[in-house]
Image (tube, rainbow, N blue to C red; front, side):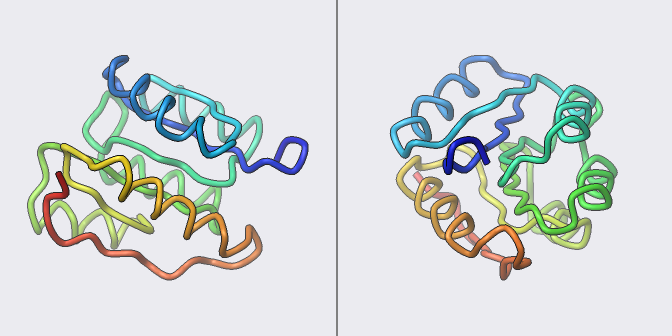
Length: 138
């Protein structure tokens, strides 16, 4: 955390999506960091652990292995996964790999902000309960 504000790492290979997410979360007062792929995200996490990771799962150096790697390094950090290419099997694999929450794109920003706020409210020392979003939120 920086100056009492939670840090959120936004990871997406689509710059417009990162911008949309950044703008939507900035209004909540979070310190935001960005990465364009899984390797960049992993390097940022190794330098400074964020309070929450919001990530696309389908990106360069991404996928379920990427979620596994993140979870091994940051066991208590909530990982919120988003994808436009998922189905029930992808969702279950993401949860087994350590995702805390899962959203299908397009993501409704109000729902995403609510999820992020809930997870960050749990405190960084507590492993949050999994939040399952079962339908496409628009």
